Structure formats: C-alpha cells, structure tokens
Image 1 (cartoon, rainbow, N blue to C red):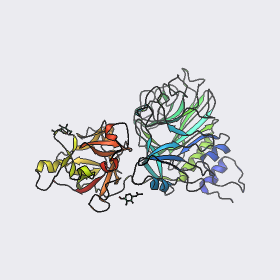
Image 2 (image 1 turned 135 degrees about the vertical axis):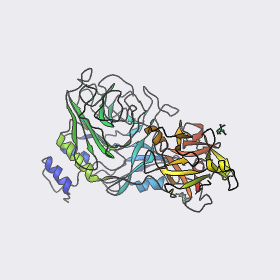
Image 3 (image 1 turned 60 degrees about the horizontal axis):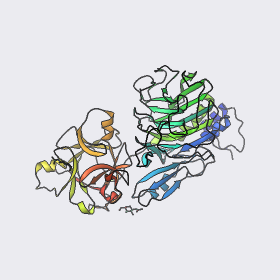
Image 4 (image 1 turned 30 degrees about the vertical axis):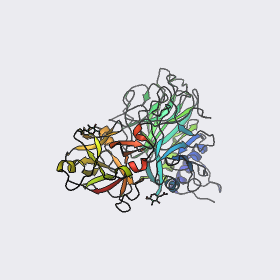
Length: 515
Ligand SMILES: *[C@@H]1O[C@H](CO)[C@@H](O)[C@H](O)[C@H]1NC(C)=O
Ligand SMILES: *[C@@H]1O[C@H](CO)[C@@H](O)[C@H](O)[C@H]1NC(C)=O
C-alpha cells in the first residue's frame, strides 16, 4: 500500500523521510509529527488533518428541533461530508456547535464564554457561527468553513498539551483573505484560561485583519500578525514592519511560531505556491521575553473575549515545539494539494442582476403583503399592492437586483425609485440608505438568496420562494416581524428573532417588479 503522489513525494523528500510500505498520503499533522513537532490541537470543518482520521470534524445544531449531529470526513483523511449536513439542515437553520480536535487530546472548540468582554447571547456567551455561511470546494468536493460575524467566538479554556510559559509552539490556519475587519480580534491560537487580559505575553495567536491600533504591515492591510496580548505584532516591537505585506489571496495560509526569544510570522496563498517569511527574529520587549503563555485556545476573538472582529476559518492546528520552515513548507504543499476553491453562495430561484422584482410575504397572516420602503426609509410590508395602486406605492415595493456590493457572489437590492439607495441592515433593522462608500455599508447591503426555508411553494409554483441571508451575518435572514423588516436569527436574543413562524417569515415569493 504505497501511494505517494507528486507534491507529497517532494515534501517527504524535503523532510528526509525514507518511504516505507506503511506510508500513505500524509495530512498536515502527519507532516508535523514527522518533523518532530506534533499537533496538540487540530481543527477543521472542511477536512481531516491526519491521513488516518475518520472521526467527527464538527457538530451542527438545527433550528427546527434543536437536534445535533456530527459531520465526519467522507473517508479517512478526506473532505467533510457536506451532503450529510445539507440533509440534516434541510428547510431549517444550522449552527456550528463544536469544532472537534482531531489530535486525540480532546481540545474541542465550543461557544466562547463571557470574559473581559461579554458576548451578545443573554448569558454573555458569544454567538455560534452559521453552518452554511462559508461554502467552498476542496478537490472539487463541497465543504463548509466557519464564517464568523462580529460577536461570534469559540474557545477551550481547559485545553491539554498546549504550550505554557515560554515553551515552544507553532500554529497555522487557512482563512478567507477577503473576510476581515479592523476590530479586535480575529485570532486563532494560544490565549488566557480565564478569558481575561492577564498581561503582556499571555497570548500567542495568529491574527488576521486590518486593525492598526497596535502594529501593522505594508499597504492598507489586511495583515497576518501575532496577538501576543496588549499588542498585535507584525515584527519586533516597531509598530510597522513593511516586510509584512497586505494580503489579497482569497485563501490564505497564516503561520505563527514562537520559542525562547525567537518568533516568526509566515504566510502565503493557500491555493498555490509556497510560504514566505514576513518576520523571524527576537521577541518584542516589555513583557514578551520570556512569554507567559497560558495554553487555552481561542478562535475568532481576543484573549479577553473581545469579539468585534470577523473572519472565516477553514482549518488550523497548534503544535508542541517550534516547527522548522521545511516542515511548514511541506504543510503548505499539502494545503495547496487539497485544492481549496470558491463555490456558489446562493441557491433557489434565480434573481438575475439588473431585473426588477417584488417580494411577497408567505406567512399565513400576510400573504398579500409586499416588502416596501416607506418615506422614512424604514423597510415595511404593505398590504394589497396591485396594478391599480398608486405609482408611488408600486415604486416603493419594486427592487432592482444588483451584484452584491460587498461580495459579487451575492446580490444587493437598489430602490427602483431611489437610485443609489440600497437595502442594508443597521442594528439588525432593515433600512434604505445611500451608499457611503464604506466597506461596512457594502457588506451590510449584501444578501445571499437561497431556496426558501419555508412558505411551501408560496402559490407561485415550486422554486419561486426565496430566503435571503445576510452576507456578513449569515445566521440572519431578511424577515418581516410586525410588518417591519429585520435581519433575524432563528431563536436569537432579539424580539424579532423569535423562533415562532421564523421559516415562513423569512420566505418570500419572488415576482416581477410593480414599477
Ligand atoms: C415607516 O415605518 C415605520 C415602521 O412601521 C414607522 O414607524 C414610520 O412611522 C413609517 N413612516 C412613514 C412616513 O410612514
Ligand atoms: C423542504 O421543503 C421542500 C419545499 O417545501 C420540500 O419539497 C422538501 O420535501 C422539504 N425537505 C425536507 C427534508 O423537509
């Protein structure tokens, strides 16, 4: 049983391994093991990170009945069984409840608890991520990443085997290089066990985003940096390291490693090519040498549960020991060979760009009501619009489909009667607002249509019903509640998130525009 393929042969050679009959295609953690720096945590919702791993990758919970299921690879060492998730989550919403540790140490990631900062849940926990916000393909097979909106976070404050004190460790993560912001802090790695800021050097985590409150790299970002607590570092102490480039890859490999008075940042395109070293050298001064690492694990938040950041995580590991560049290069070759690629963010009825549409509610209370804006720019549902309605009303209920302002794989809705004004969410209420040129506006005005969660066929024939997901808050859907428009999550903390009639309230019949 000897099956080394091209790219795998080269990194095995790079590591100086002697191929034996027992070697099968290696995964990232097999490579780290061969390099003498084994994984002590291995997380991915997209694929197995050991060639022999066939256990659970992650757990999802569905909104319809609160049941959970585990998603495993299609085969040992393979890609996640996304079809199993799609079946389990059909016609309802699903959240990622657990990201399992594949290392055997039980270092699973769960909903992060309140710390220095509280999460948005009523108990102060962070939100869980949608299970469907980040679809990709890996080697042509569909899989889902972890799309994390502000307020979303995972952690493990009782992890085992993660570096503490000044002990050596390494880590990498594969992320979406186009999904980021400047808030603190989209991190993956080593953090405080108390979810509180206990001082400089108490963290060592990968950071990705364009925060400039501490360090930065060249250009306007986003950058791979290291969150070492009370500082995002691009290099040694100096605020700016121009050797740390702005990242524009759709899929990015980000790596950070540290040992006594030495650390490094490395990065590259997760879909092709090799890693580059953006910093390698001494520790910053001021409490970072020696380090005081605590050995908890965070994802999507800072060590004190700062949860304003956004980003997408596909896979990542933490190691015991300081991995060699050659080992990391071999891991990068494995990631490239896995072939991450984009796939459609939408499903359901076609909403062709440039067409004028209307959206009719499907909830039994309201099947004659249409989504419209009123003269104070609030989104409401209006009853009984027809060809004999006033032209003002017909125009207010007509939407022009545009390419998504924040992501062209989804759409934006421009008011027919107010060019340049789009539906956006603001504090989770829908409003009609003029573009202000900001990234925040573009993202808040981007929606991803999918097959209707409810509403039967809405009387418009099969396939005419659409549910419209917020791109940047994919747990949230365009909903009418007391005839006012929101982006609502199924059973979330706001009144308008109520689980009752959720599926129907977020399901709309697509019709021709009235205007
Ligand atoms: C628009 O709708 C909102 C929500 O129902 C309402 O409070 C407001 O008064 C309406 N404005 C106009 C001008 O109708
Ligand atoms: C989901 O809804 C569609 C349309 O109403 C229906 O055809 C399908 O059987 C439903 N699937 C499940 C698993 O309930």
